[in-house]
Length: 168
Image 1 (spheres, rainbow, N blue to C red):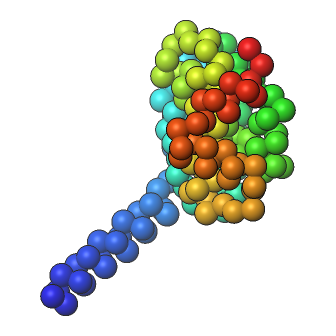
Image 2: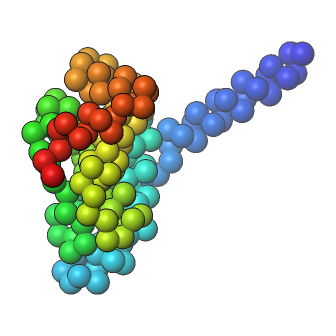
């Protein structure tokens, strides 16, 4: 029995260590000048969104700043993705830049995985779901509005909430 306990603890520690040390997928150098530049970086954009969502690094780490910068620069100039930031987003992010970027990332991931979609409700829902996942990964507490929306999501009522808040 002690041998199995040691094995289980060892696996848990190594998995936790791997999760904490996964390097950022941000390219060492990148340039956004032509429309084709944006297309070339789609795999890294998707990987960066996933990494930001699941990485429990402090919000002020150099890796996280580099990932945020890469993602925001890509979204800002992308000819294929346009993120709508409405009042409910700032209310939910509660002055937390990581949550705002999480919303933008969720919206962007959904848009890239569903080319041509113009469904603002689906895009906004994906953004909010990413905010919730990021908040959870960061062990976030104290954001009452986001936690209320998270409770609605658990009950399957997030789409109803989104319909009330998204301007069509």
